[in-house]
Image (cartoon, rainbow, N blue to C red; front, side, top):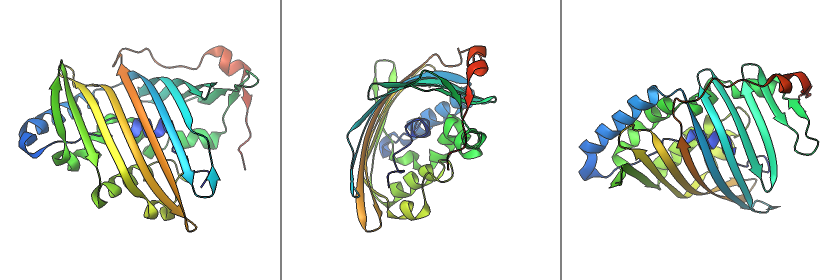
Length: 263
């Protein structure tokens, strides 16, 4: 179970456009949804900031609360990103492009190049789908009737409080898209949603998301023991389609040490 700590970055992009709506606003919300879908299909890059708090309890483990701050520049096609992630005061800088995955060892300050197998995982169709808002919107279109919406300032506030087997299946489908080996079928079968709340602010003019909060509490059973995972993520997004092409600096590629594939 120790391996089943939710991959923060993958999950962050995975739920970027998860939203829900009320019955009386169905027609208007359908229009908003389609406008957001159309806008996302034109999305090429953006910046993201996220604060993530995670607690894991049970399952025979004792783990401290984990707080993570992410600052990232994301390019969707071809998939590339530059991010700095601070985990409990320890900062890790990372690049991912077609050249491979590079990260800076927070202890030694040395740049490392990840093994090809790990870089290939980040370049699978499933992971690219997670990064692509258009694909995510299409996947979630079947849940449009569950939206709630209000208008505030120049934003549509879209929210969903999910429960029940239908949303268990949604979360399973999303998590099943994570890189191979992250989540087993056995774990997915035992997954239970206690709470899954989304709030997303969409700009009325551009139909891009400007902020998102996801509050999730799930149980997973393995070997007769239940592990509870509670995670809250608060994200903001900006500079849509305004970034330069993401490239790994020459200094990084020149000094990076090749990592062996971990056993």
